Image (cartoon, protein in one colour):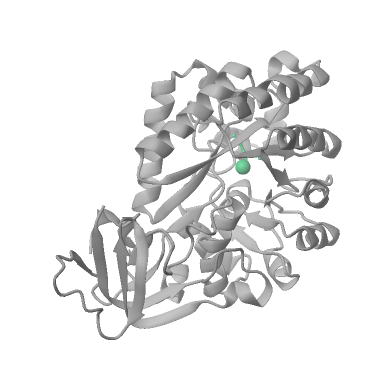
Length: 414
Ligand code: NIG
Ligand code: FE
């Protein structure tokens, strides 16, 4: 790692700060014309506009942004990155009217991915997830979260989390790890929910924490999956072992997930498609980041989370892909940005904050990534775009031209 000077940035757009931006602050970003960014040893050491800094006497590699837009590297704060197989067979079932929960109740859905993930070797899972991370990086993502939850037994949950750890070590992207043993009740515990809850709380969570394999503990709080009291039990068990709570809440039915954020002190709540007003109020009081996943609404054909109401109520909104083989087989965060404007009615500025600084806050990394300012990691994207409106308006093309991660150029197509 060395010095890198990115110059001739037509417009630099970034939120500012080391924590989530909420309310009116979510849409208040810094815009600099004719800007430059100086990085050294992976960290941003200077940002300015107009004349370049005087670096005479140093050999300084220069990256010419050719007048394009630059933003922070995108943060995808919610993915189910590591899984065996795919589920294209469910498309026909969907077209014949089966819902997501119908397919799960019949033993398909998450449970069929569990079978494929149990069968896959650690190496197979690693290679497949690495290819997905590459694709994310080429589309402008520089930090991602990844969950377990397709093992649902001790061995496979640990296998997934070891893959996630290795991805973080070997891939340029930073990868935050989340334990999601509470993703479904596996088939072998179908008639013994209590037995599965005990396995997760008393055996798997201690093992995950013992190997330091995850920072967060998540749960799918959903009708037919885990009730709010069961979800609370799993998250409280995680907390006893130092795992920070996250909740898949109000995705299909509002059974108390968003209200639980305040009770357990969740760092983020996910989905929130049918989040009621008192859930929004609970998240505002708790300072929980609402991590909204509009590509999942798109794929499920459901309604969209009330993200506009959340911003208006002072909840920090992040947006992420939810990349997974069932409810969102897409990792395209640029499409998520389109949907943020078109469906959530957020402004392009609010959308940028949602996929950068607020995403970083949802995974506890807002002091390191999510904005272009001195002291943050050197993560930046140069877009084939003149301004922010353009990337929120164009659909279906990959507009990320150059991607810089920790001061290194990891993709360059300018
Ligand atoms: O976030 N909702 C629960 N989990 C995933 C879907 C997982 C799957 O269908 O494989 C989600 O949408
Ligand atoms: Fe999810």
